[in-house]
Structures are given as C-alpha cells and as structure tokens.
Length: 377
Image 1 (cartoon, rainbow, N blue to C red):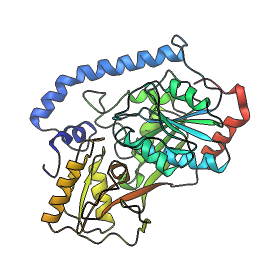
Image 2: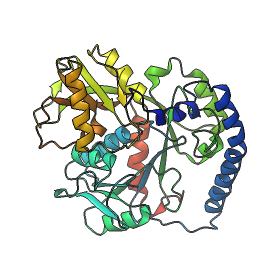
Image 3: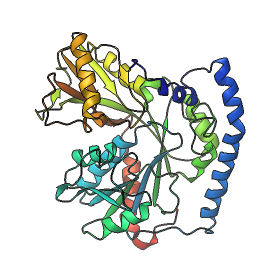
Image 4: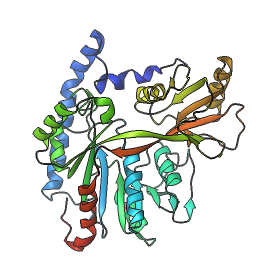
C-alpha cells in the first residue's frame, strides 16, 4: 500500500488542487461535454421543483438543510454538530437525517441513534452519522436515501421540534426552510466543471437557491476576496459567513479521556485517514508540530476493517512509531475493544466563525416564530 492511494489521484485533479498531466487533460476534455449535459439536467430538475411541477414533502416542523455545491469534504459534519448543539441549548429538540452513504445496513430508514442512545455501530451505520450520534447523546440520528421517510419516522417519536438535513442541498424532494450551503474558500468550484469532468454537483448558478453561504477553511485560503466576488455574481445579496475548522483535542480509541491539544500523543506517529481531503489532515498535523511518519490515505468513506488496521499497526511498529493518529471520522470505524498493541488517537475538530453568527442564529429563531407561515423552498 503506497502512502497515497492511487485512487486518490483523480479527485485532487477534479477539485482544482493540481494541474492535469497531458493524458489527464485529454480525458477531461472528453468528459467536459458530459459535465455540461449533467449540469444542464440538474438545472432542469431544479426548475421543475421550483415551479411546483414535482411534489415536495413539507414537514410540520422547521427543516434546516446543510449541503455543498462540490463533492468532497467541505466541513458539513462540524456545521451540523454546531447547529444541533445550538438548537439543544434553546430547547428545540433536533433530529438529524442523513443519507447513510457506505453503511452496511439496508432499508428505507436506519436508526443510528435515538433519544435513549446509540442503536447501531459501523459498519452497519455510516461513519459520519455515527460520529454525530456519538458527539450528540440524546439526539436522534437517522439515515434514509429518501429523506422524507427519515423525517416521518423521526416525527413519529416525540419530541422532535426541528430537522437537520445532512448533505441535502441537491435532495429537492424535501422542502426546507433554511438552506445553508458550504463552499471551500480556496476552491469553491473545484476545477469549474460538473461531474464527471469536475467536482461540481450543480453549476454555480444553483447558489441562487441558497439562503446562506458559508465559506469554510478560510484560514487555509488566504484572502477570500476573489471568492466573495464570485459569490456576489452567482448569489447576489446572499448572507455570507466565514469559518474555519479548529483542532480541539486528541481522542484515544481505548476510551480514555481526551488529551488537551497542547499534549499530543508521543511520537513518532503513523497517520492514516479515509477522508475527502487527506492533504488537509496532513497539513493540520504538521501545523501542530506533531512528529509523524508519511501519511497513509484511503479513498473517502473507505472501510477500515481489523485486517487493514492490523496491517497499519505492523507498519507503524516496523517504522518505529509510538502510535497511530487518524481523524475522528476514521476512529469511529475502529474496534475499540481490541488491544492493537499500539495506542491509537484521533484529532478532533470544532467549527469556529470569523465573526459571531448572530444574524444566522436570529434567522433560525425566526423559523420557530412563523409556524405554518414558513415559506416553501
């Protein structure tokens, strides 16, 4: 297994993180017409919903959607966690509905956690919904390819006062009262092309549907002025927030209390991850001054069964590592009951805003005061 999995070569090309080789440029040129066709079909589909020509399910409680325009990691999970925590603080009783990408469980609706606690673990549960359920005890987390079915089941078990739709900007069959769209501040459009020629799920013009745009990873983007100008062209007048994902602490796999950020696990450490932006994880560790070996990266959402982890531990031992380090999203997929022979930790993250999100919180409060007068999306 190479330090960088070969399947990870194409996504950095599609999201603009590197220039194509001559052979890749020819491939992208061949795919560009398909990308344009895909973008056109997405515009037509959105238009059918906007004109009421396709039905949309309207929940009896406020629905807040968190999504993005480009495939890959933009930080949706930290924002959903932040929203759920704010809603709980005000007694709103949120439930989270996600798609459940990569989970082994099958069925119209999967209950990852309910008000009593966790009900499923990976691989039956998808990694990100399980992570959210662990971080938010008492908050129901359900997965459903058709989100309306998940919402109905969440509503059937009171109290459920608000729905958080995870990764749902393109899931138009469910009406929402607030659409929050995340964009990477450094590469908001990837390489500018729609799938399969690029990473865009929809053309930038789709931002006209958004109620709020949130630029993520602003600390890594430098000055986001150019991105703000592009947003004004595609989503004029939309409120804008800027945020970053700040390291929080070191979470041991064995269940011990988290270690303060100022006390990283002793190194050297073997880092590994299965996320959309492995380079971001490597850069964060380097910025914290952690003594690491070369990163082992797998494709996003890749399973990490015991055999894979045993191979990583053996490699770590052979290279003189004192332990292994991964992301929290990866840690939840590992068997914490087994003695792996080396300590394994995750670096946890939290969302921070460049300026207090007062206006966004006020808008959310308004959703609960308008009742049945909430506008259709």
